[in-house]
Length: 134
Image 1 (tube, one colour):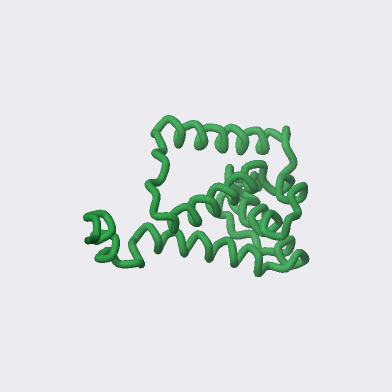
Image 2: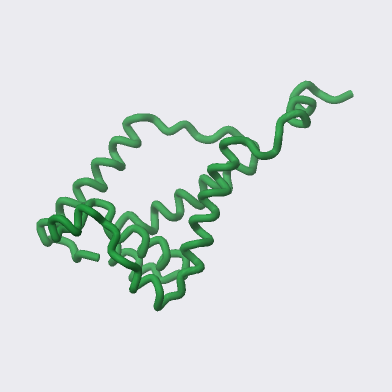
């Protein structure tokens, strides 16, 4: 006789909204890997803030940082954006975690606000010239 939890698991569809988001995250990782090492340095500037002000926004360089991280060029990735490699690792880890069927660790609001504050402070520091621009 099946336990109720295994019967419930058998009735749940495989492609849940969470897994769809996880597949998108894995797709981002795959797309970052698809950029060749010479290609991602030449990605076009798409940041409207940078186009209007000439200053980097708090997330400028994150795409190039993701691509460099996917290729294992961590020093270059950190040069593009300090939070790129940790964000790439968190995205990849969270995407893979979704397929374990274990509950996702709870993200508390203060955690999200702390990360947002750190990224904003880093963006302001780059605008001030304390860190290299991408």
